[in-house]
Length: 161
Image 1 (cartoon, helix red, strand yellow):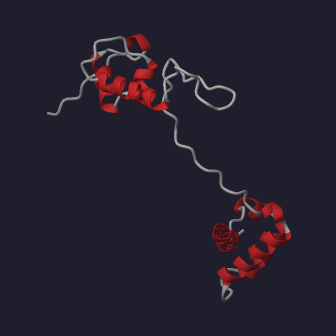
Image 2 (image 1 turned 60 degrees about the vertical axis):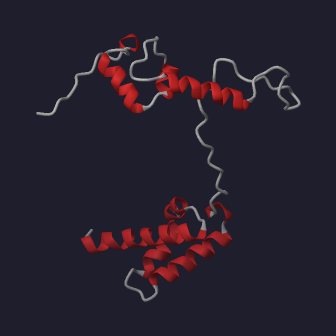
């Protein structure tokens, strides 16, 4: 196969990806479809209005075959903070149990704990502490050998010359 013959399918696939992105279609599934790709490749990238024609082909394929549509986007949930040792109790009705700490109280405790985790922290460092501490603080602990109990050997310091 010559280089020109290899560029036609690549250009066709790129055009399908661009059209699928604009139409909310599944580009991978469309590119796996022999029928769709044969029709797009037959046009050739030198055809006037190539991208517009490919977009129309993709629109038609999505209208005739629902499997080419992307599922609605799921909301992205932020990473949940590390849960404290004492989780808030929730009753089956969804209400908070009486006497259980509120979410704000738990977040305040977590923030207090984070503030305690400084470079010169002298307590035993846990994996939860590693997640809460600033990266520069964790690096300082590693350099000082404070993470040896977790299998992290003391790190060498790099000095400028």
